[in-house]
Each structure stands twice: as structure tokens, then as C-alpha cells.
Length: 295
Image (tube, rainbow, N blue to C red; front, side):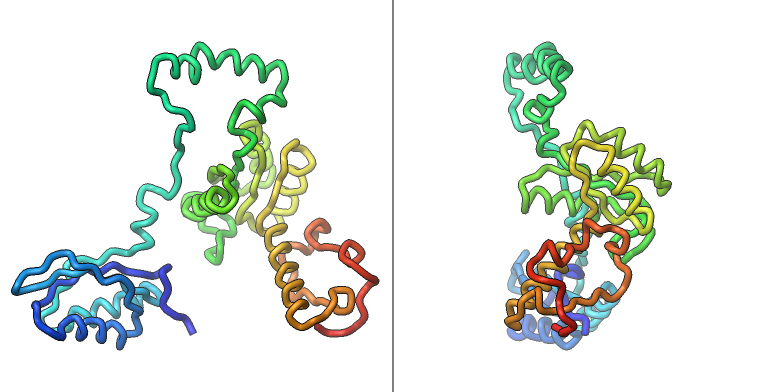
């Protein structure tokens, strides 16, 4: 059964009469409607009334609307405002570009930009490998999508894919200290995607392909991996294979079995059906080919 979560949470500003028991009545009504009460913050208090911001986790938007109607039906209670916390988080986007060095003096500008920067460009022109030391290239990943297979939403296009790609860029930064930037392409033509990624590759140290539908994703990843001199990773192939294998290894530890003694079955074609690099071969793990023993 679906349970309330922060992914569908509301902050509701509520005004009610300042009487003993009214807050309990309010929280009970939310609980009866299946909502989960989080923070309760006082905004304003007077002898006559109280204004509070109440955070409520819901199952889905429809559930949220039902809860709000239950609150509105309470005697002496006024719903002043309702804010969707997830939408608030996304206002203006979730990522930004910041300078690593301050520009506080004329000398700073002369070194960071013209005329000093010309010496850096000249050094890279003479030795392209210096781009990894003298630019953001060494720590910058392009998160590339065409919006054709976004999460469980399907083909929603590049604009609707932006929030997801921003989120992936956040994961790179927060968990890996790697800078990443979303590149949402307005084409779903395989050759055009390959050409576009190859064209922008000089500015990045790696390419992360994201939410591109099969079977085009296989050709795109294979071609880019063979023609670019930087790593190319397709999250829905390599990432999925890595976490599934990790889950299998952990499951075997729990049941006390060795990976060489079991037979694993993959149900469904999935993203690894044509990609040998995604499927670890038994000889790459340990021991002989497994016997026909279920896990």
C-alpha cells in the first residue's frame, strides 16, 4: 500500500481560534484523513487566534486535496495558504554555477580573464592534455538526455526531463564531489544525439547518458564510448547492472551461499540484453559455472 512521503508533502498555513484542544482537533483530522503530520510551526499568536504552518506528508496530490478539504470543514478553522514543498524546492531550479575564485581586485580580473587568460589558452593549444589541469574539464560531467524514457513517465521530452537531470547533477556533487550539468537535447534522432555529444565533449571530463529509451541507447553509448577519449557511462545500463549485482551479492551473504554455487535468472530483457559489458561473466566472478541450484 502507498504510504505518505515527503515527495508529496504540503505546508499548510492554518488560522484557528486560540482555544485549548483546537490543535489536537486539527492534527486528529489530518490523521483520520491518512496524512502524516511533520513540523508544526507558530507563525503568529494572539489571545483570539493562532496561525501555524503545518507540514503534512501525503500519498499523492489527490490525497493532499482530500486532507485540505477535511481541514477546511473543521469549525473555526481557516486554511490561509497551501504550498507544495516539492514544487517550492524546484522554483528557479536546483543547481547553479559559482565562481571558485573571487574577483575583488583589478588584478584578479586580469588573471581570471583578459589579458592573463590568453596565456592559459595558449598553453592548452600547445598541449591539449593540460586542459585537465587548467580547466573544469577534469571534474565536470555532462548529464545528457533526450527525454525519451524519463523515470516512470516515459517520453516526456527534454524540457520535462530538466528537473530529473538537475537532480542527477545534485547527486554527482553531493555524493561524489563531481560537478555536473544537465544537457537536455531537443532531438531523439540517434545520429544527431551522437553528433551533439561529440561536439560538446571538449568541455567535459565524462559523459553520463540518462533516460534514453532502448534500443537507441545501446548504439549511442557504444558509439560514443568508442569515439570519445573520455569515459561514457549510461546510467540505465551500467548503473542498473551494478546495483542489481550488489543486491545479489548482499542477498547471498544473508543466506550464506557462494556466488559460484547458485544460478541467477534475469526476468525481462532490461537494459543489459545487448550489452556484454553490463553482464559480469561467471568467470569474472569466482569459481566454475554454477550448478542448477536455486538461490
